[in-house]
Length: 118
Length: 107
Image (cartoon, rainbow over all chains, first blue to last red; front, side, top):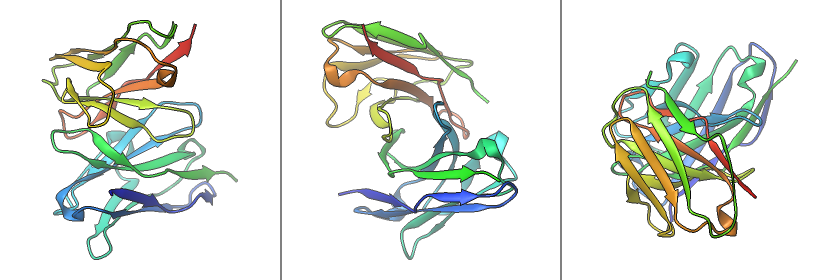
C-alpha cells in the first residue's frame, strides 16, 4: 500500500533552516509528483510547491520563492523540502502529498511539526 | 495567483441535512478542482478531483459539481463522521491554491 513517512518534529531558531523528508513506498516513486502543504496552528491549508519525482521540475508558491527548495532522491524514494531564513510565522505542520492522475493529492504523510522560536 | 473563496466559513447542520459548500475562483480553472476533508490533528483526505470525480472509497453521499469559476461540494445526507473542515484546491495553474476552508459543525 502507498505510504508517505515524514521525518520527526523540529524546533528551530529564527533565521535557521529546516529540511523535512518524506519517504515514499508502495508505488513507483518516479511516476508521481509530490506536493508540500503546510498548516499553521488553527489556520487553513497553504500550498507550498510541487516537485516532479520524474525529472525534478518544481513549482513554488510565490510567497516562498527564494526561501524554499524541494528535491528528490530517487535512489531512496525520498522527497525533501528545505525552508531557509525561518521566521516565527513558519511555525506549522508540514505535509507531503502524492498527486493522483487527473489531479488532487490522494496520499498524505503524517505531518511534521516545525516550531520556530527563540 | 488564482484566489479561491469558499462560503460559508462555518456551517451548522444536523445529521441527515443536505449540505452545500461553494468555492469560487478568481479566474477560470476549467474543472481542475479538488475537495478535501480534514479532521483535527489529521492530514487532509481527498474527496473529489477534477471537480466532480469521486475518489475511490469515498461515500457516494459526497458529490462535486461546477466548472470555470464556480464549484460546489454537496453532502446529500450529513452523517456524524462528516463533521469536519472542508477545503477546495485549484490546480489549473503551475501554482496551486486552497480555499480558506469551511467548518461543518453540529447544530
